[in-house]
Length: 113
Image (cartoon, rainbow, N blue to C red; front, top):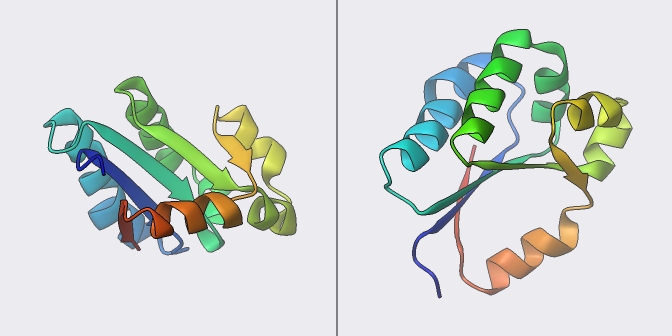
């Protein structure tokens, strides 16, 4: 198992949770090299919040600029009608059920909010 990969599963639709925990830890994890590879997974209500909030969108761009991979759950994005908006932010929108299951089964480091 590669102990230097971190996956952050962001499901909260609460902006304060995004700003004060999810985004701070995700960004600093890569910037300060706490983890070699950091992936943010946008799932559920967080996809709607991100599609509507320009401040959070800018922070996602900052994360992408330092090498953080950002994925979003297509089923969730489709349900909220935000798939195209997320894709316009250079977020890879894919069905996440199987990939998340594989991450869990392989023992990867996954942090959820």
